[in-house]
Image 1 (tube, rainbow, N blue to C red):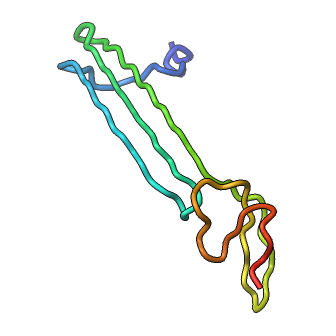
Image 2 (image 1 turned 180 degrees about the horizontal axis):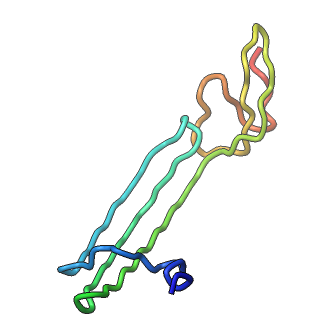
Length: 103
C-alpha cells in the first residue's frame, strides 16, 4: 500500500473539488531588457465523485530575445554580458554577440 501512495499524481489527504474549476492566467514580461516572455496557463478541474476529481493543466510559453553566453571583464572592474542575437534592444552595459565593444 505504501508504494502505491508514492506514485506521481496521487495525493493523500487532498481536498476533492466541490464544483467545476476553470482558471486562466496570462503572464507577459521583459527580463533585463533582453528577453520578452509571454505565457498562458489554463486549469480545468471536474469533480467525479466524493473521493475523486479530474484535474487538467495546460501551459504555453513563448520567449523572444537574447540568451547570455559569457561575461567579459571591462575597464575599471566593470563586466559586460555578451548574449546571442536579440530582438529586444540591449540594455546599457550589455551587447549582442558579434557587436564591437563601445569605445
